Length: 341
Image (cartoon, rainbow, N blue to C red; front, side, top):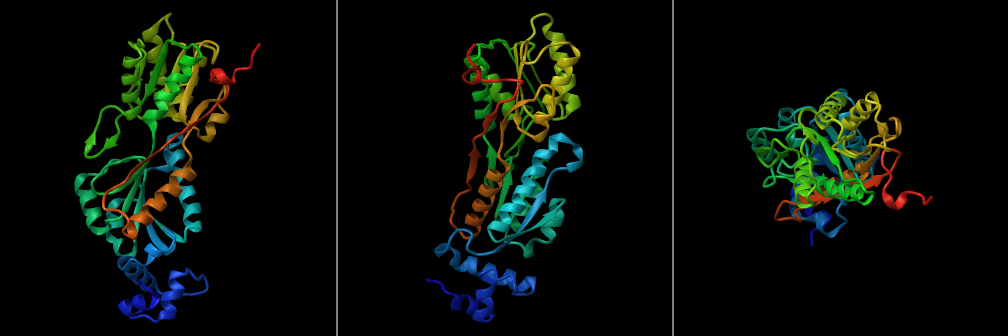
């Protein structure tokens, strides 16, 4: 069994220094290079395998692949970033944030692993270079290199299935869908997002007519949600859907605006349900029902997966899907929640 003396001998530092670094002693000041060397050797020797998965303090890089100035569509990633900060403190991890992959690669020797947060696609060349510099990494929300890195994602396809069934159980039979552009999976950029793929597939399986009721192109913005809702309403004419499933809250805000402008009552004429459960859902008119993706769950799962990877628990890459839950508000109330008259 590896002990502190083994690590001290391998690093050339005193046993007391090793002990204070590995215990995360806040009163102990040491050079970052010293801390990094002790933690690196402890991981290589398998010291953490006999402790809890967060038993060794880690220095973790965070690649920010999103722009917080883009508005509601990126507030989801801002929420996950804050959750990462909170969970990192609890798990003896310190985080450093990087705006691009090249700056992260240049500083890679200072970190035990990395987390990538955000939807921006990365080139295969950048992913390969990142793996050579930092082999331990977890991507949140996308899965761009499943053979190189781990990933943690909300199970959006299952969410879409659950939403379809919830709408149908309420008697909604003319269900439309509004979404956005493609999604990174492996080295492929599909023209359809997984939410759109799931809706199309289950509409076919359930014999749901969807002609003229599916609009899923462009960015995940309020303006695009409004434009696509207007196009859908024009295409449907008098045969307006009695429910709309929207791929993200940012789009749904624009959808509600378009329905209001046409004098269409929500949920009486058209139920609207979305995905993300951002804070904005509480302030739309009417308040928006949305499937919640829990930032704290994403953050905790990501950091534990990364820690397990660093200490050598895995031979293969792990790709974890987290379920969602419906937060019902006025735009759609599930059948079981409707009070009896």
